Length: 259
Image 1: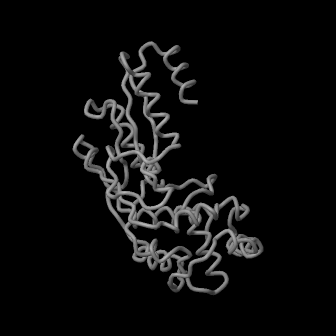
Image 2: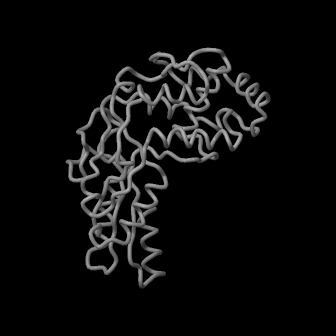
Image 3: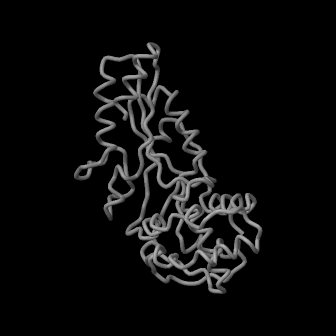
């Protein structure tokens, strides 16, 4: 797909100036288990396959001798208001909290003890957009890859009580479970929530992708991407991740998707 896009762009745009790739923390193998942290852009690659490697190798080769330049961003999980995308940790957490509250149970953490206690990060979609503009226009970013996160760190054990307070429910404890199995019989509960709170009519699987929640909450080590390189290049924007989670959850509520 990238090769075809480059073929078309170079053919149709003789004055092509820049190509930007959006990659991710999977570059460092975070989807495979524990990995070196803080992750730096020049860390050794993990054993392939990884399509990020294929894409970057292709664009490096294609750019040789050309006037256009390239850059790449490596965000962690995007946090944003995306009502048509259930693969979103915010809507997963929100739907889980809403169902727990309806069932009269505390907001237990469904992930692992390690995830509960580990340091983690996130990337506001707007932060990524600002970084993409910077990387695509800054001379210091030409033909380089950069980590892009909010620039801070958080622990679920500190954020989770704040989410419980937002939903006006007691905070529970770590109770590791499989979210897809837990949610298998929760459709009637969700339908009741939608009726009672006059929410927009959407199926539970249109709001939350439960296997993605399992992936997020099974984090087995600290997830930290070094932001030194992009800051040295001149990009210094930061976002408060805990406040971001709460504000996006509130956005879902105001949109009548979550109660």
